[in-house]
Amino acid sequence: MRGKRKRRKYIIIPGDGDPCPRCGKPMQVREYDGIGETQLRQPSSYTRWFCCMNENCRTTLVMPVRYKMA
Image (cartoon, rainbow, N blue to C red):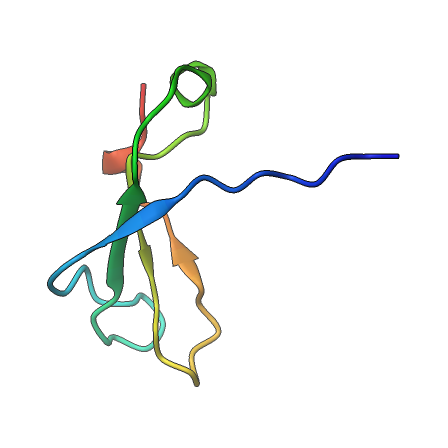
């Protein structure tokens, strides 16, 4: 039996983020509450990402390349 995926806690950064690529409204900015060793080892981990809060928009998460951990 497989275990459930553990989601890391995130915090919401006050203010508006980038505009949504689909609806154009400002998105919510989120980042991890703390970056651990496992995230630093992953090839596709981001320090910050955006979440569109518009209920009518199909876009959920936007992860820009500028916030990708190298």
